[in-house]
Structures are given as C-alpha cells and as structure tokens.
Length: 489
Image (cartoon, rainbow, N blue to C red; front, side, top):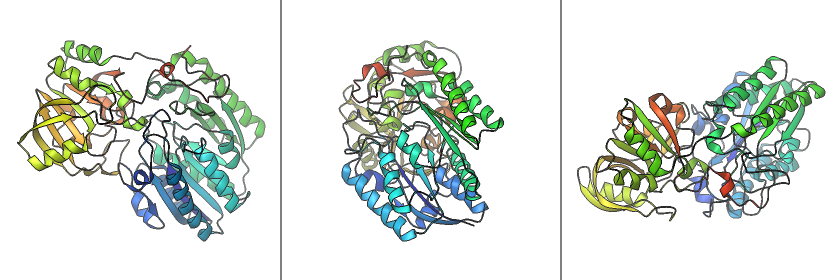
C-alpha cells in the first residue's frame, strides 16, 4: 500500500479572448465542482465523469492511502490572472508540504492553461511541485484531449495519460488508466517515454473522434497497446492558444526505450499523413438556417454554434443564429444555452406565463446586437441539476437562474453562467425535450454529439460570431514555434 497525494488544477485558456479568468471562476461551481480542499474533494467528485474520480476509484481498489489536496477548475476563457494562478498554487503547495512524505502524486490537469505571466501553466506547476517532492517521487497526470503538451511537462512527469475521445466520454476512464500506470511503477517497473510535436494545428470541430480521420487514427493507439506498448496517445491540442508549444503531440510509454520511440514515430507519421483531412464544411448562420428550413424530412437538424462555444472560451451569448431564425421565420426551433443573467433574473421576477420586453444576449459585445422583443416566460429553473448524458454524467451542475423563453415559434434556454449545451438534462430542467425540436441550435463544437447525435437527422457546423474560432487561418499567431502552421494544406 502506497501513500498517494491527489490534486487537480484545470483550465483551458483561449489566449485570443480578452476576458481574464480570475479567482472567482475557480471558486464557483458550474458543471464541475468549485474549489475544494482536503477530504471535501473526495465527496465533490464522487460519481462524476472526471479523471480524478476514476483515479480514486481504481487506486482504492489497490488499497492505497489517498491524500486529497485540492481540486479546482474554471470554465474555458481568457488568460488566468497572475493572482488566481499564484493563489491556487500557494494553497496547493501548502497542502502538499503538509502531506509529505508521499510515495506518489496524481494530478488531474487540463494541459492548455496559460496565465498572464506564464505561457506553460502546467509545466511551471510541475516544476514547482518537483521542488517540493524531489526528483524520485513518481508523478502521473491525466490530461485533456486538447492539451498542448510541452517538453517540460513530459520531462517532469513519469507518465501522462490523455483522454481518447472527443466528446470526452472517457475522462473517468483516463484517471483509471493513470492509476494502473502508477501501480506498475510502484511495483518497481520502469517506463521509458517517447514524445513528438507535430508541425500543424487542428481546428476543434475536426478533432472529433466520432468522425474521420481521428476515428481511424485512435484505433492505432489501441493497436499499439495490444502489441505491447504500455501506454500511447494522440493529442490533437488546443489550437486557440498563441504559445510556443501549441499543437498536436503524440506520446508512447513502454518497458523498452527503442519500442517506445518506434511507437511514437508510427503515431507521428500516421497523424502527419492525414494533415489535410482535418477539415470540413463550415456554414454561415444564414446558410445553416436556410438549409434546415428547406429540409422537409423527419427528425432533428442540429446547428452547432461552434464559435460561441463556452467550452472553447467563448462567452456563450452571441445572437447571430437567433436573429437569422427570426428573420427566416423558423418554427419549432430551440436555442441553448444562451448566457444572459439579467434576462434570467427578469424572467424569474416576472414569473411563468408573463410576457417581458427584453434586449436578449450579446452582453459580451461580440457579433450581432441583442435581440429585442416581447418574450413569453414558459419555464423557470434554479440551474441546479445532475448531468445524465455520457459527457457530463453525474456532474452536479450549478448554472444559476435559468429560464425558457418563447419568441415567434422559437424556444430559447437561458442560463446565468455560461456552459456549453452538451446534455439533455439542461433541456429537461426547463421542461422541454430536445428530441421534439425540429431545429436545435447548440452552443457547442463537438461535446454535444455525446448526448444529441442520436437525435440528429443532420448536423451542420456553423461559423457564426464568437471567440472559439473554427478557421484558424483567421487568427494572428505570434508565438508559435518555427515551422508550425495554422493553414490546412
């Protein structure tokens, strides 16, 4: 039995977003728990699809003593403030110093955190941790599929496990795999590591593992492990970070150094060969709504409002597609989730059945103007419910006051805290079934597919206004390492 410290500090940073991510964002719960310390961590993450929850479950099966330190995350947004980063680090460092000595450390990280004063958020964190625990204590970390893995992150850890799905339905499983890797190390097994960075960026909508080319590429990861590699990973990266180490990577761990290097090279070559395949059709708001209205078939058509996806750092409040639905006289359409705390508060003050005058959405100033109209309040919710879909499974959400508003045949689901529309529980909380809508507009890029794809007759990826940019060639990168391209060619 080993004494294992566990902690988590997660943020996916879109450096092209002006809004900073401060301490309040890490303290406040949203889809995931807010800041917790000590034993409260165990209860906060229990039963959720989060990597640390899977690690806890697997490590407990091996009778290890777990020492919970701290867990916190914040919704994707702009740079983490220096104050928030250093405050959370000081809390984590204090907990870790008090927990010493430990036999190992597990970390639940994102892998794409950028702070005002640090481009490599996780690399810096790991270096500071090593200064406390020393070079010989094993560190295993679980990372998001969108990690921008730096050489420093690889060097300072003994193993990195990475989600294998997007939508991320295997977050808890990734934590379990991390626990099994750590178990091998604790029994004396030595793992050799191999790592490669690829020379191009992959737009988020085309990182989906349910479609090509990643649906096939991820099978190579499994094949390599069947052939004897201990752990392998293809990591597409988070492309909305203007940092030196932005971009896709591959990893391999094995008991033989040469075999690990060979596996990493096979992964690298396979991904590089598919470079031009990471591409797809983007619709404008007008094109998408027109296409959906022209389709007379049965079933739901989903318009993925990818560029206003809060899961990529956007505000979740743009109104471009909403304006277009009104302009083209759409019926049986539903938009979710639009972040507008003032509208939610006004709906609660008025009550169900009331008609209220609102200038809805666009609080961030991105894209179209607020949609002015007379809205009927059809349902209200406190924003507290449990996720039921494969991605948010078990997550105890707290999205603040919520409301369902109606305008000219269009239903609009409002939340007070931004969260991508990736779980049908968000709809049921406001007494509406997603499956009964002819047109669904979901502020999400890919995660919605986990719980909504089975409803869809067709899925259109829409490039309306928003800060989660899908066409990376539109962005002006300044810090990418030499040779890395945002052009799909």
